[in-house]
Each structure stands twice: as C-alpha cells, then as structure tokens.
Image (tube, rainbow, N blue to C red):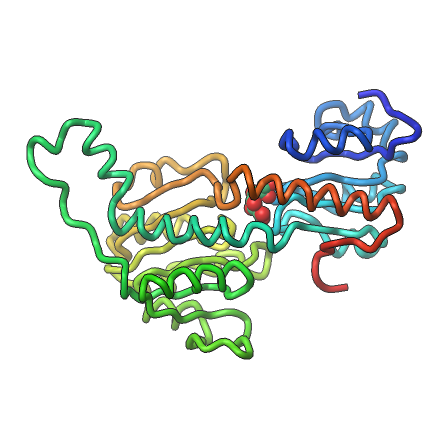
Length: 318
Ligand code: 8YV
C-alpha cells in the first residue's frame, strides 16, 4: 500500500478485522504484515512505522521493536497481550494498549456455555438427533450443572463476570490467584491443585505468558479427579496439553471444554477424537457487538496517541 505523508504509517502484525481496518484506513497508512510478506520493502519502510496494530494472539518481540526506531505505540485489539514484549516496548518508551472490559460479558457467557454444553452434552446431542440415532433409543444421561462446585483459576474482570453468572446457577464458587482479593467473599485457595481438589468444574481465566505457562498440569488434573471437567477460556499456554491428553486417556478427569489451544489454530488430533471434550475455535469475544467495541477501543487508543491525548487503556504496570 502506498504511503501518505499526512497519515502515520502503521504496521499490522495480524490480519485486522474489517471492523478495525475500515476506520483505520481513513487516518493511517496500514501496511498489512509487511515484515512477513515483503521483508525487503519492510526494511525500507521500517524507519517510518509509528504504530503497530495487533490482535490478542499476535506476537511482537524485541527484535521487531528494535527494527522500528520511530515506533510510538502498539495497540492490541484484545485484552490479552502475552504475545507482546512489553518490557522491550517500555525500554524504548513505546506505549502498549489493549481492550479490557468490553469483552467481559462475552467471554463469561462462553465459559457458562461451555460448562452447560459439556454437562448437557449439547454437541453430542445435536449430532445424535441429526444422525437419526434417537429412533434407536435415548441419549445417555448428562450431568447436572446447577449446584456444582466451580473453581476459578483467576478472578480478574472476566473471572468475576463468570462467578456472577455461575451464582445464578447456584454453583458453589471458589478461586485461586496470585493472592487473595480484598472484598471478595468467595473462598480463596492458595494453589490450583488445592482448588482443583474441591472443584467439579475448573475454569481457567488467567492471563497467558511465562508466569502461567503450564500452570494446569498433571498434578492439577489429578486433583480435579475422575468426575471433574477442565474449561479453558484463557490461553492455550496455561494448560499442559500433553498432560491433559494423558489425563483424558486415563480417565484421570471426566472431560474438558476448550476454547483455546497451545498451537491454535492447529488442534491436536488426540483432542479432536475424545467424545468427552467440547471444542470451540477461540470465540470468547467473537460476537459482532463485542468485536466492534474492541475495534473501536483499539482505534481510539491510536487516535489518542496521535492527537496527544491520554491513552484510554494502556496495559497495567509501568
Ligand atoms: C481474540 C482474545 O483472540 O482478547 C483477547 O485476548 O484472545 C480474543 O478476544 C482477539 O484478540 C481478537 O482480536
């Protein structure tokens, strides 16, 4: 795309949704994944790039930041920014923004949908009716969700939105996180193992990144036990997928409902074959309304940067 002197140059490091791209094109010259698609052209253009537009699953590492001397801001359309080297950005005084808040409802809704879908076997029931199997007898019984024990690994904005909804199902809620949250009445457990040991549904809703990598491994799954279900709406990296596959094979846990995966969009064949696993393709925030709100916020952060206004939603910390 040709550069325009009056418009700041922006490198998009992911395929931007039309919702975001359309508003951006009016104000910016957007170079769609130029660093990957045309490294030679990118090398020429790099000194002019003033912003990076990214999505929640994008990678922006120190090497890329180092190639962009004029970079001012990395705007992530997503609440998670574990793919961004924030320390490298900060060292260069490059701002990093994300889109918290606007997707809480959707991700929490999906967590509840996954629990219900798994407990009441909705994908299997749907296949059962379509295949005409009903005429030969009923679907095997599902499980009751109302009143079950919910363990939340993470009680940030989305974790609290899940708890709020789960309360309406009479679920008994407990949580773990780095430390107990003040003013929260749900019981706090000091570790994921301790929480899993007293949960029927263990829902992972903690940020990704090095700190939480493989937080859910063999020991946690063992503690969750043969009646337990693991639900992940956070990041694939938080769950040791090999350990999960072993646990599903061995019946160490009853099943899982997963929206995120270690190597998405590739999903291991083993996971795809388990009947007791419900799979969705990272759709936590994937509604028209929420993606619009995320696009608007990601765009507003860019606009704030280039008009000298305070950023709306910088990532936390300094
Ligand atoms: C999407 C997400 O993957 O917000 C996040 O962190 O994982 C999701 O909402 C994505 O960022 C949409 O652009």
